[in-house]
Image (cartoon, rainbow, N blue to C red; front, top):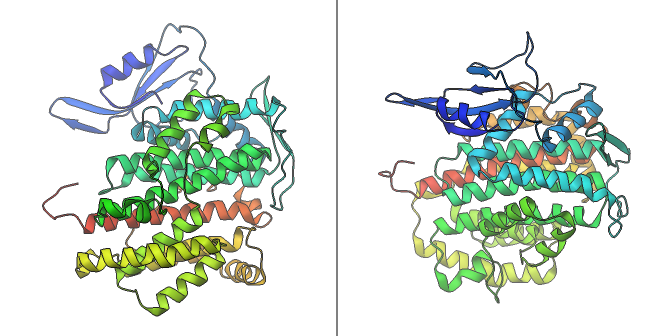
Length: 464
C-alpha cells in the first residue's frame, strides 16, 4: 500500500516516487463530480500472466528506479504462513486490507509497525534480555525458525500462539467501521490493537522480559481507552477525573489515547533496547481493574446497581485476580462515584446500553477465558470441555445472530482459508491460540458496543 483516498493521478505520482516500484494499481472507491479517489498500491515484483489483481486501473512502469526496501511485516507474514500451512505466501488481498486500514487510521502506523517488526527481529542478537531466557507459562513448546529472508531468520518458541495474534490485526481493521466514536479514540484503538498484535507475537515468539512486559502493557492501554471513552460520553466532571477515568485517587496521568500515540511513536523511532525504559515512564492501571470498572459502569448504566451487582463485582474481581487494595478502591471509591454520576444524569431508556448486545458481548469475552491457560482451574477446564463439545464457532454464530452489532469480518472471508495461519491444527493442541482469536472477537464487539452507546447519547440531529 502507498496511500489511501487519493486520485488516480496522485496514485501514479506516489508510485513513481517509490524506490523499486515496478508498477501501480489504483482502485476507485468513491467519486464527487469529476474527481474519484481510492486506495493506491505499488507492486515491487514482476507481474506475470495469471496474477490475481483485484479490479482497478494498473500501470506497469517501463523503468524501475533502484531496489525496493524490504517490507518486514510482509516477510514475517509470509514466513509464518509457510511454517504453519506450507503455503509460501500470505494472501495478498488480506495483507493489503491490513495495510490500508493502518493508513486510514494513522499515516504513521504502517511505518511504526515496520520498524517495530524489524526491531523484534534484531532483538534476538542482544545479550541483556536473552532470547528464550524467560519462558512463558503456556503449554506450547515448539522452537521454529521463520525464514524472514535469505539472510535473516526469526526463532519463535510458540508458533501457534505467535500466528494467532494476527487476529488482532483484524481487530485493528474493524475500527474503520465505527459510526460515532470520536476520531481520536478510533485512532487510539487502531494504534493500540496493531501494537498488541506485534507485542503479543513478540512475547510468545521470544520468551523475553521485554516481550512479556510489552504484551501486558498494550492490553492495559486498550482497556484504558475504552473505559475513558465510555466515561467521556457520560459527562465525567473534572473534579472526579482521576478516580473515575484514571482509577487512582492521587496523580493525574496520560489519557489512554495519548498512551497509544506514545507507543506508536516509540515503535517508529526507537530501537527495541529503549522500549522498556520508555514504557516504564507511563503509569497505566492493570487491565483487570479497568475491565472491572468498565463492567460496573455498564451495569449501573443499564440500571443494575443493587446488592446483587455488588456481589457479582466482588466475585468477578476475585476471578480476575484483582488485588485486595484495587478491589477495595473499586467498591469504595469508584462505584459510589459512578452510581452518583449516572443517577444524576437521569438516563432515559434509549440512552442505556442495549441489553442483548451487552449480554452477547460479555458472553464472547467470557468464552475466551477457559482457553487463557493462566486461569487454570477445574472450573476453567470443565468450561473448556463444554465449549469444545458445543463447538466454539457455532456458539459465536448464535451470539452474533441475536446481536445487532456489526461483524468482525474474518480475513478468511476475503481470501484466507483460516482465521489465522495454522488454526486447524492449533485449535485442538494449543488452547492459548484460541484465547487470542476469541478475545479479539469479544474485544471487537466491545468496541462496537461502546460505539453504539456513544451514538445513543448523541442528538439525532448530528450526522456521523
